[in-house]
Structures are given as C-alpha cells and as structure tokens.
Image (cartoon, rainbow, N blue to C red):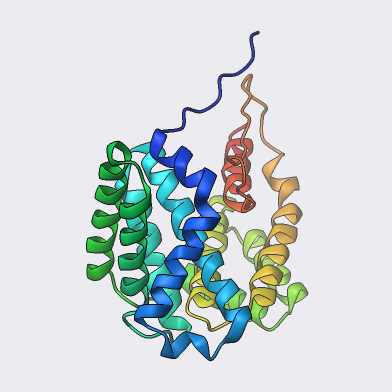
Length: 260
C-alpha cells in the first residue's frame, strides 16, 4: 500500500495557516481601536485571550474554505454568539471583530485568494445576525426518559457520580433499552452540559466531570452491549486530527457493537 495522500489545502487557507497568529493580532488591534472600552480594562491577559479567540475564528474559517462549506463557519459563529452572550460581552462585540477580520483579510490576502474567503465570512456573518443569542434546554419534555435525563443531569451537576450510575443501572434493569439510554439520556444530557457551559452557567471543571462520569457509566453497560451475537463485520471509529472530543464517536461505536 502506498503512502496516504495529504488532504488538499486550498491556497487561501495555506496563507491563513502560515500567518494566522500575525493576522489574529492585527484583528485584535483593529478591534480594540474600534471598541476599546470593554477590553482595555482586562489588561494584557485579556488581550491574549482576544488574540486566541481571533485565532480560533480564523481556524474555523480555514476549515470552511477547505471543505468549500460555508455552513461550517456559519454554525461556528452562531455558537460563538451564544458563548459571548453568556460571558456578558457587548452585543456588538462579535460583529465588530468580524468586521475587523474582514478588513484584515481584505488587506492581507492576495487578490486571487481573498474572494472566496470573504464570501464565506460574509455568509457566516449574515447567518450570525439571524441566530438566537440563547438556546433552549435539551432535557425538556414530560415522558419517562425526559424525567430520567433531568434526574441524571442533576446528579452529575451535584458531583454525585454513584447516584447518576444507580439511576442508569436501575433503568436498564427495569427494561429501558441501551439505545434509549444512549439517545434519550446520555446524548441529551451531554448536549445540555455543553449548552450550560456555553451560556456560562457551569464551569469547565463541571463539564469535564459530567463527561468523565458519563464515560465511566457507559463502560458499566458494556456487559449488555457485548452480549449479542457477533456478526462477521468490523468497523473503525475515530476522530479527525486535532479533535479531542471523542465521546460521540465512542457512542456510535457502542451502537455498532450492540448490533454485533
């Protein structure tokens, strides 16, 4: 077998990758010139975080350009809009930084490359303006799984890992299917944990605890998952490079394992 060909990188993103930190610093400088009051009081540490965030914005723009999929950047900006609202940033903050981003890219990308980059950025900004600044809960509803998901989440947020585990094991022993537990409880509570962190209602430490506890409880279900008839099939499930959030991929793998 020959060596795997590298994923093609467009000309626009090769420039962004080569100069991303420099461009991020220019974006922040321009942003501070246009909207200084909320940020200068945060000092150098705050400025470094602003540069980090501008770097993130460019990284997601790169991915959207590489995939020729503006939705990747649009969905990212919609997510950041909720995040900034939870942090109580000025309502105009994201629009100001996107305007600064557009100017910096317009001034620094070669002419043949800037058209597509600015097109995707403009589509993202337009979608961002329509996106909500808050998100509804993922664990609403009145059926038994809704109630179980809320009780499970309450246990996790109270750092009661054993109580959370007991809720799940009791539900399985009483006949709730593994699929229903994964889709109706684990998936929804993990999305709710993400929403609560995104809206600045829980800390990173709480988010990490909830995820680690759920992964531990998933492993307690493996005797059920691995008990079926084995099929003559195999699958490899993995995250793409640089993606550290592997729980969703693990859940997909477990569902295939449940099917043998």
